Image (cartoon, rainbow, N blue to C red; front, side, top):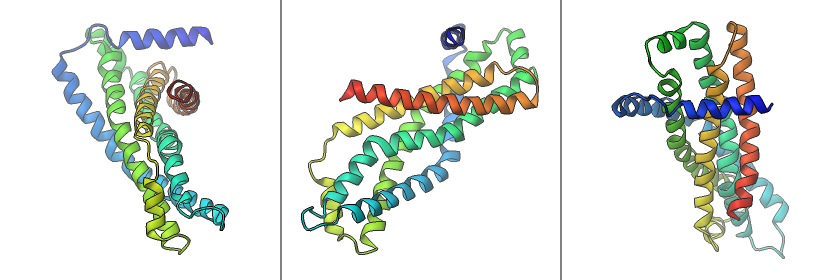
Length: 243
């Protein structure tokens, strides 16, 4: 276990040694950002919309009481969405979507000896292939999480207002009630850290794939599993540090 952790940190260090020209990375970062973003928008939109809708419905059914103000539903949905549902659940979904794609792509390049060919030509294959993915993930994940937060709140609005459980005024008032901008900062920090962890862990597992097509699939599975564990651990430590 310790040897794997040490190998991981050595892999991270190799990303910054013998790099190519900055212009090469800029183009690749843009390409990777478009790839990660466009292929993830649909699944993130669907998941966040329905999570918000379910959260709004369940919260409303459990809290509607003469003793509880109706706007409390909006407050709870807002805080759950911003602090936990949007960053954490979205990034766990992205760990399966983006992480498996990264691990599978790099694993295929490894077993077809494309990575070895780059090394023979004097190119730092780890830096050239992985560093743009890491930077792109750290740039696009906050955008996807922001979209997920908005759609989750919209889903809560639709499920509570359109079904008559709350009025539009009560839900919107609850979203605005004693709003803390700091929570947005926490969500963005989480998304950047999660993007880094998912991209590096998945790249590590894919880059060191050995064997054939079967091992590529196994690397993708292990990459998703380890990425989810890393996200959950980081979620706990970030909450401890920032609150």
